[in-house]
Image (tube, rainbow, N blue to C red; front, side, top):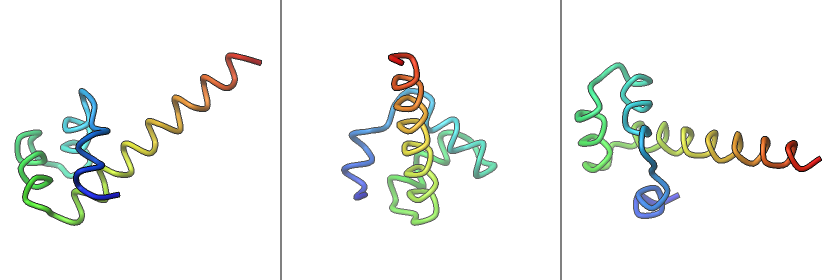
Length: 64
């Protein structure tokens, strides 16, 4: 996923979660992402993917 694609999918709380994973402040995590830090982008992509999978899983099981 490109940085632009990630920006479109970021939701409230993603930077706070990213900061906890990296052990830094939310502001520092956001700045690392906008500066193009590869590790930060990879972790953020994983956070977004996990959130989307969790939502999909529970929406699917509720309809059954």
